[in-house]
Length: 269
Ligand SMILES: [Zn+2]
Image 1 (cartoon, rainbow, N blue to C red):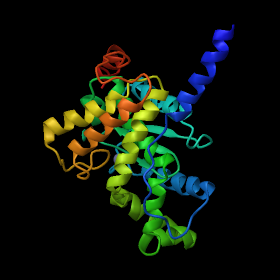
Image 2 (image 1 turned 180 degrees about the vertical axis):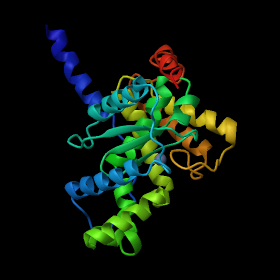
Image 3 (image 1 turned 120 degrees about the vertical axis):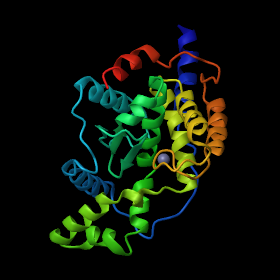
């Protein structure tokens, strides 16, 4: 009995320590509330859902969407940085190796990424990286950075007609989501933390970055989550250092990768 009393507090402390490594960065000239961010994100999502040309909807086996959603929800549920935010996880029928997040809790994963992942841990790492961009307000801050001019200000301050056209233009060109080098490092550290909390080996993010580097070089011209900067080698080094600090994580471990389970899902694509 006394043994339990000793052990339980230790576990609680360890779990609380598993979170993103924060890097102080750019400070927005003004803030919007979480509710406003969610409203903005939902408007973005509605535009993306309408645009099946730029964002081809996935009409394949429903088990694939269910897999991505349940993995994403598990990652979102276990993180404690933005506990009350509702997340959505959507598969897009797109061969490019890509995933992205928009403000307000919406994550998109391409079939190309799923096809090029070797196991569940790699997919979890990428999804957790995108969740990290949301929990750390990276997309919202980029949006606010540009809000002083152009489309973003129309969305925040315009009438409904100008909001609609500005949203459509912004969704047609998501390059406004060009995260900074520090944002990427921060999201990578979230990937390690959140994968671990979800019970998945955090080496997945590192392994996927390494695979991309082997295949496309150190600075591939790929949009999120493998942007041209920082170079992949820098990100791999940092991820390895973060993994070393996570209790129970190991670079050598081949457990908790869930290869067979993911193989079954990938075969449906
Ligand atoms: Zn990223």
